[in-house]
Amino acid sequence: MQFTNTPDRYGWVAITLHWVISIIVICMLAVGLYMVTLKLGPLKLDLFRYHKEFGILVLMLASLRLGWRLANITPRYPDTMPWWQKGLAHSLHWLLYGFLFAMPITGYLLSCAAGFAPSFFGLFVVPPIIAPDDALASLFGTIHQWLAYSLIVLLCGHIGAALEHHFVEKDNILRRMLGIAREPK
Image (cartoon, rainbow, N blue to C red; front, side):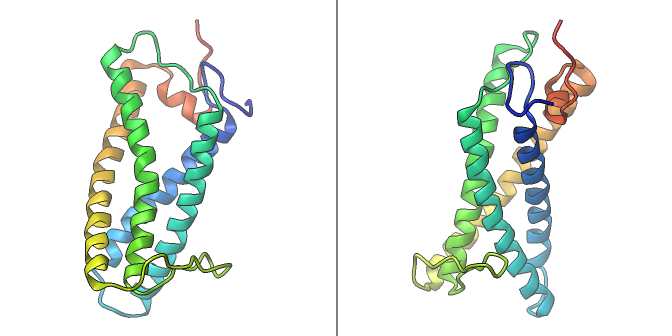
């Protein structure tokens, strides 16, 4: 498998970043939905700490992924794909990138406003950029929550479209992100 993208397939760097970020984000959404239902205690505090640490990791990986995306070509869509699907797919991908930044940033701002500067796996503490403020904590908490719900909907659409292309259209859309794309005819 090639290092960089080609007009027909993704390279291993793009594929690795896609799947690592995807797995972390899906786990973060599940843990986030679960941890807010818990009563205050050691498990809830541990989950919040891990959630923040992995949120910082997502922000770092998303930055790397966006840089890689901008520095590489993007494989083209199949010629059989209607123009409106291409436009929708393109827009959805950029919207997902936006969420990869908005979620960790609002989580960080929530943490700062709540008076807790997040640590990155004990290696360093991200300094707060705002002072503790209950009203801001509530605002950022609400924004973070609704972004999470919206991201779940977008991910379902993204996954559903990939599966539709694989099982119904039988094209290379999913295969190229799995690293097993067929050669074009």
